[in-house]
Length: 172
Image (cartoon, rainbow, N blue to C red; front, side, top):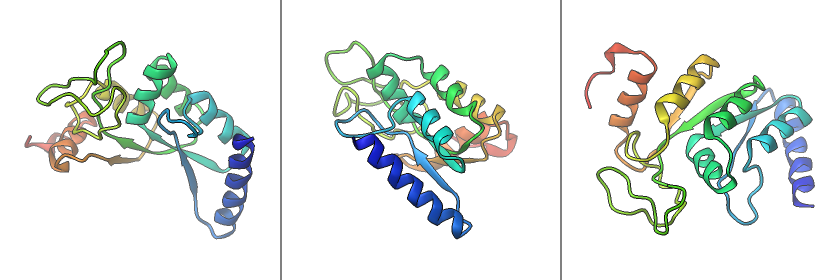
């Protein structure tokens, strides 16, 4: 029921955006009760059902979903990229680990607030294979990468630039 309502609302929003010459992207969500579009297959399905709709891949959300739902993170990312409809990506790290009784522990920090917390850590402070994910985003030509961290953003921005092959990224 909720998925149908969400799809109908997205279709209406897409029509309005299209009429105004504005693009619309839907973001994959973290596994929470009542949240839709947690799985790569759901994202692929909704963009195939609604031509013109794009995807905003949130790497942190995808990581947590892969742990909770048991799919391979990079395969899920590749499935969404294969649609050719990924407009942007939110790039951040999370400390979530599968199989731990307590919250994930990440280098340089305390345990996270929840087992599958969406901490929005600086790149390299968590457990996500960020370099591999960024490589896939780059190969697919995703041109809008948003550093989405609660930590100071400059070190993550520099790290992301180095991952993308920009030698002038220097610094931390």
